[in-house]
Length: 80
Image 1 (cartoon, rainbow, N blue to C red):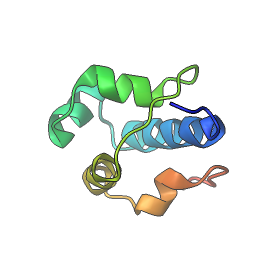
Image 2 (cartoon, one colour; image 1 turned 120 degrees about the vertical axis):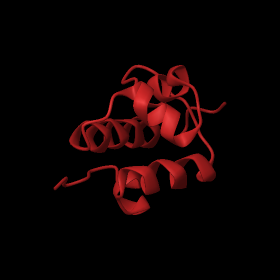
Image 3 (cartoon, helix red, strand yellow; image 1 turned 30 degrees about the vertical axis):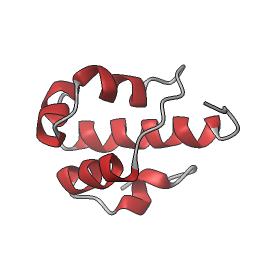
């Protein structure tokens, strides 16, 4: 995988972690709700890793966390 967009991947991971924690969910709980593995969520959120994921997974995560998908995609998110 190209790392051309590594900053964006990392921002998405940070945003997912932020909203997951805000929802009071562990990585395992979110993974179970989205029907993916905990290790997959962990790799997406890891600050020193670049893990891509499908739009379907992002939509599922956003829906589960009850946030607009655009909040997960922002690279300089002002989180609420």
